[in-house]
Image (cartoon, rainbow, N blue to C red; front, side, top):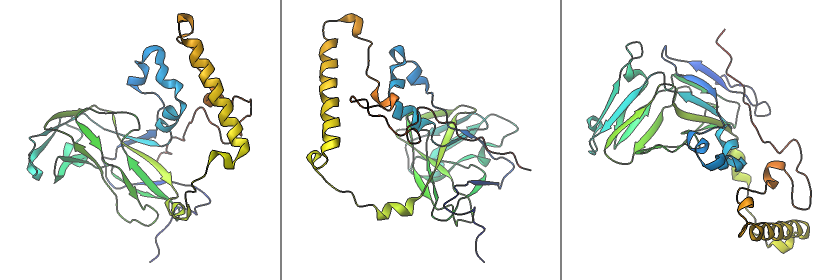
Length: 256
């Protein structure tokens, strides 16, 4: 029997089938990060690729607080998982399954995508968590008839807490088979005179800007924002359809 695929690759689509009464909340990724807010004058947000990556996918959030304790040993019982919400059995969404300092989160969904489109599953981008690291997976959700899990690897023995509503997984779509048709081409910048001239103009502009900062405290907080404007130093403008400064993904539709 052929699987019921979610449309074709020409029409990106993500179907989320609930397979548990304890499914986790799924929301569009957020561009903001606490540590970015705390940087001086919030300068981290001047790096547009960071905030765009933060919001290019959907988050799965913890339905309740969970505490993970690892004694450093390799067995499955070396990790203890504790939950404190009487309405959310902790073993229904977080548990020790593999040992090796790995804790497993269970989203509670079976995802389906169009042919050739997979889900790239990882932790929330640019959101480091001390003592534990998200393991990244590429899941072929265009045919898979069963759900996957999200796993984190503790980096040292100790205790880790995931707060209620803290994201434990981040999902984004990828047409992964097309990557196999890509052959990286090594070239000299001089092979593309137009691009070379743009690069040289940026280099001169950047050097002049950095020189102007020296000894002038009034300019210390200044910054060039060519990337955010989608503009080169020669005033060439990026295509409006390809350049984004914000991304707002769709909120999942409720079950009918």
